[in-house]
Image (cartoon, rainbow, N blue to C red):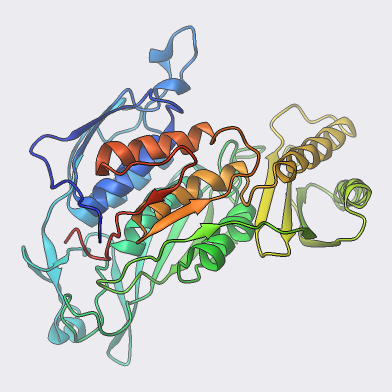
Length: 428
């Protein structure tokens, strides 16, 4: 039995932006849920905990990555908005119920037909790609002129893309459960390696494999066209992400993360200027890993020149016998002083990962909060074993709070919940 989502209220659900983590995670999750459930939101003091403690009013507000994700979702849902601008500390987001009927003649002619009764409109963000007159894919493009984090934008829009079911099978009614959904490709320009944000390497080696292997989401492919950096010379990069949405009317089965198993391999990704520096990092990491895990395999999937001495990055991913991946990384954000900086980089990332492994849970701190929205949307009772951690991370508790406020769903003390059994296209 599915959980009843509160009907779209006359007045938006108010979310105080300084609650718990008080940063961008609250905003991204609220936008995702609002876009799916059509529950309007009013967020005040956006990212209010990001300002200086001496004068919080001088910080926070929307940054370029938050703005890009908000604008994309607003176009995708034909939302009525206010306060959607850089530095805004208050915003209203009210998605529309206008939706789209897919007919064979519309597909062939490349036309869009709109009504208020069936599948959601997506013409505002999608370009149709045809092969021999058949629609094979929908493309969308998001551009940031600065290296704002690509993957913070991705976090905001992924649940909507997977569950919106605006991609009904060609020639079928949007209310039909037959056929496969149409794949989509999202190309995003911005930062791939940005301080305090997920890196391309973490997304590619931890988040996406776990969503596919353990959550049950169709495999998501990601391609790096160019890197975007916030360190050294600012550069805007580009990635393409291929996603297969859930079929119309289907739901995500509940999932359980348990039984982590033993560490069997370590994956080491290095970005640094000059081969000599990268070799030193490789040797130091190898020494640390062998000392702690003498019987595991070590792989180096990324060993790449960062093209600037101020760009120094390391990711370690531990893979277990049960197929779990836990990672820790650091985009070095201090003054570069060789060889001290290399020593600091390696020691910190190795120690951080060892702390993650010591708690014997199935996820690292940064994957933990990314799973909660899918746990809440799934059908059935889902759980994620955090191991010996005394309590969930602040980001995770923030996500749970937003979900509870917007859907009425309740989480047990251990984070277990019975999902709302959201069916793809349910908000249409």
